[in-house]
Length: 74
Image (cartoon, rainbow, N blue to C red; front, top):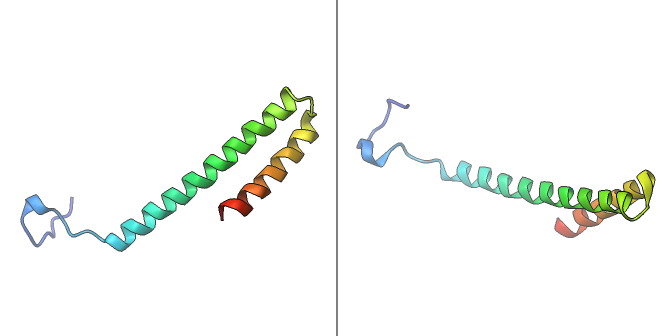
C-alpha cells in the first residue's frame, strides 16, 4: 500500500484515469478478437468433424473466416 497519500485515507490515492482508459480499451479489444477467433475455431471444428470437410477443409474454413472476421471487425 502506498504510504505517500496526500489526503484523507477514505478518498484513497489519486487515479491515473488516462492509463485506466487505455487498459480498459485494450481489455475490450483483446476480448473482442479472442472471442471472434474462438467462434471461428468452433465453426471450423464443426465443419471438419460433422461436415466431412476433414482437416484441410476445416483449416481452409478457419483461415477464410478468420480473415473475414478481421476485415469486418477492424
